[in-house]
Length: 76
Image (cartoon, rainbow, N blue to C red; front, top):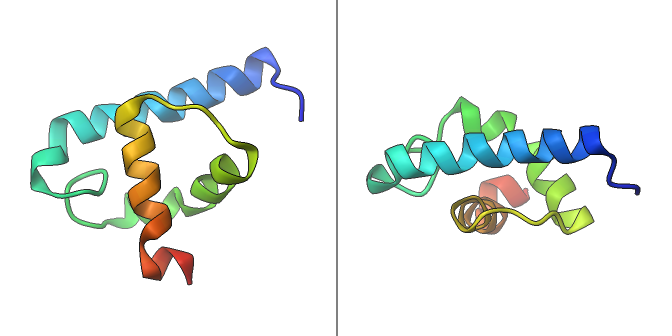
């Protein structure tokens, strides 16, 4: 899949959202706002797309993605 400028911008925006939430709320737990919430559920399809296409993310976002992908409920 070609990495167009628009696709790069979309990935960067998701990375910005995820890393920003983790910086602000990371002390409360491993999800975007600490505890699992609807925000995490809404991003579930993105988790699997990023995994499939090997998207490169910031360290905070990558840690969040790995946590989400290892969660049994998300995997199910």
